[in-house]
Image (cartoon, rainbow, N blue to C red; front, side):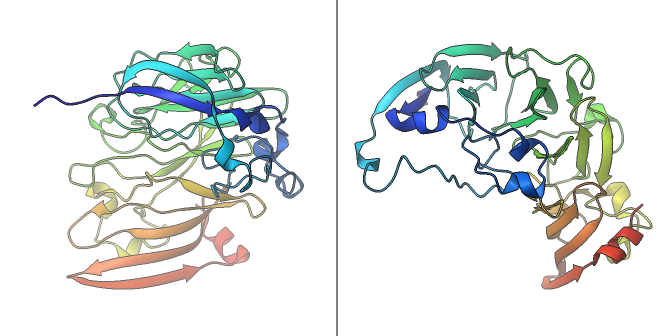
Length: 326
């Protein structure tokens, strides 16, 4: 039986100019200060619209009165078969997206003209939902996940930034557990940007063998690891005693593959891990983490013990969670 494939395209509308004609204020996504977060953001610089991942825009040129009049303004043919799950970014007049084979492209958001294309040479086998954009108003970086690698690209040229990680990329298999060459992880949903950090999770198997689903923060300039939050606690960390003995040595997953939401004013983010593989216990289902110290602010734990689900809610105050820092 033949499988029917369709050529992947990126469409725009006449009223896309309401995005591309307005200018994004860099501080709203780069620094995440309380003052900046109250500024009207006229671009789509983050996955889900804004760092809060709320899929909301204050732009008002498209409304209930004229939405029925939208027409296709341009079409970009990727030249590839397959589907796309990508939420493109729009910064200024540039649209950033992936092709089905996970080549990164930049288009003129007004005309649909290809500005550049980055081909990593990696055969991609997972969906990818978007990428991350960082700027301090002077410098800028496009942080794009391709399978187990996180690339830092120059938004103007699409070329890897050589002083980030190892020749412009980080291998996310490294730093988890055991021989990294045997690890399986893919960055299918982009990380969040907080100040000069890119915070990522990843998709991985939920059956053994699987590496632990640590949440990790990297320096956007150098690619160096700034902190790691263990979703499967290590000895001395909060919640360790609620897991089977030495679970951190053999249990895996409890990973965040679906994305995170950032509360810029409080400097914290919330994520939902998937299941983790172990003998009888399910995973933490919701956690709020301090973006700079990686300390747990609150957790909702759903634990399965021999077929019975029990929920545990723990909340830490500012003074308390600082004492739990490791």
